[in-house]
Image (cartoon, rainbow, N blue to C red; front, side, top):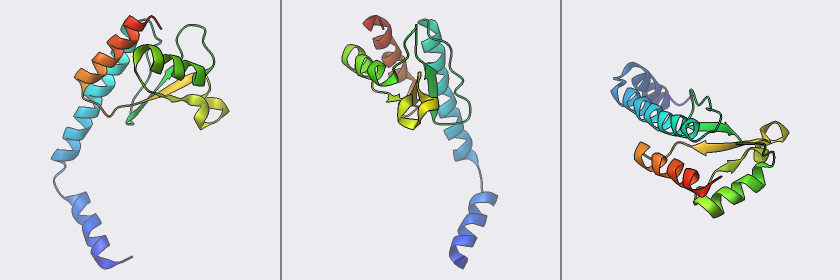
Length: 117
């Protein structure tokens, strides 16, 4: 491996991790806003530990993730990825990306709640 890349990797691993810890705190706040919010409106509380995505089981007796995503977009203005896009084991779920601040995530949850979905 190219020596400067090795040295950069060593510096990244041995250097201060404050920014990494702060990024982890931000993702945890986003995850908590989404998972707690969805649970508060009747969804099964997702387990969003360890990634920047949360997989949520479709609410109610819904089974078609693509149809659900379209309905969610049309009625609530919230865009998520259908689980079926990731293969047959993803069907019945949607994937949320934790890319917005907690305040915006709470707004999205409120939009879902008021949409009646």
